[in-house]
Length: 429
Ligand SMILES: O=C(O)C1=C[C@@H](OP(=O)(O)O)[C@@H](O)[C@H](O)C1
Ligand SMILES: C=C(OP(=O)(O)O)C(=O)O
Image 1 (cartoon, rainbow, N blue to C red):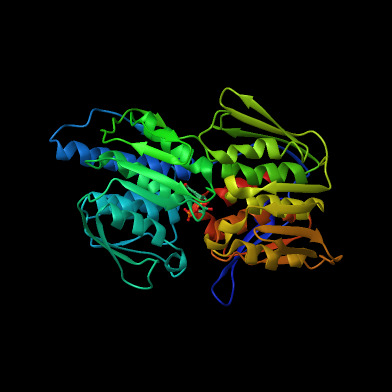
Image 2 (cartoon, protein in one colour; image 1 turned 135 degrees about the vertical axis):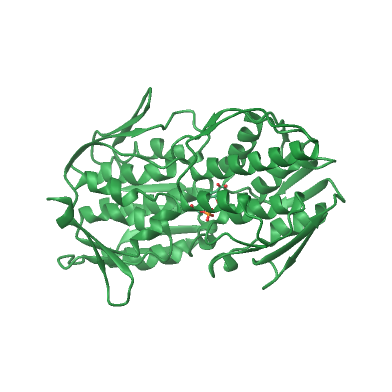
């Protein structure tokens, strides 16, 4: 079927956009372009801005370097623009890492600013990071509700260098503190309390810092970073493994699939590269090649029951939930607590949308949810998916167009992390 027929964007009466997706091809042999990792990009941009600030303070000139393949994700573009801006009000829109990383950056570089975002951003907690920065010596005040953006940032004078921080809410708070740590006169010793979630993102932060010559010491639950100068050098951002997960899902749902995904590598800084191992259970094998990976459907799923702890890969949860709907697999999803405070309450959003396919998704114990088929639904008229201003809702549900015609509400949400997602989607029609 031609892409114009199958991929029709219409303007609804209520001015919301709606994308109609018909069944993609059953035989897929193609190359799909991925965005560059937004997590890596946003860290590199903050490290670069901190290095520039450090060099300015010391009246030194930064050596020449080039950063290749910065992500075209909206979250990254916003960060790039705000780092260049001299305005007082800095609007991060719905970009979580941008909000958290900029809070720490503005505080320690004495960049007076009001940091604000969308309505949802003002419901996403930031108190744990703000309190840690205040303890270190930052002057930050809440302009709305305590513990949430918008924030007013006034300045910084280091008071302490030993702090403790909860690790079970968002790793982004810890990454934000780690990146500014070497710029502080007395460095920082951070003790992580409670179970640390999204751990690979903290490891990614420290690895990237090391790449720019900043050393850290991590013993048990304490990380020590001495005052050090970031050294800028050439760096190429890898493609985004979270974005790759939607194409693994497509490979599982098609009858035959071989998809080449350029610029992904085995030894990745991204914890979501774990998708390659997860997908072995679903019959998709990953081949690591010189310029990327090739994913091939080799069998139908080897399981009809799957259990996974998403604490380390929260951004893969929606991909796996929808894939289990597509393949009628019962899923026990553990470690899903943080999903409630992302772009939307992702647990609630998933519960609402999988119901449209006859599945129930419900809490069975603290932090543990079960997905299972509850009834046979007649999809003849198609299913309309709400996306809750969450890019991952749109991208995770798209592969379910193998089951029936889908209408995806507000498909432009994908711009947050993968602006070319729908353009790439045309390749499988
Ligand atoms: O540091 C990062 O780049 C991210 C950390 C994770 O957030 P949490 O640490 O809040 O789970 C992840 O969900 C987000 O998409 C990106
Ligand atoms: C949670 C996400 O992003 P952020 O927290 O940076 O808004 C995401 O991309 O899934």
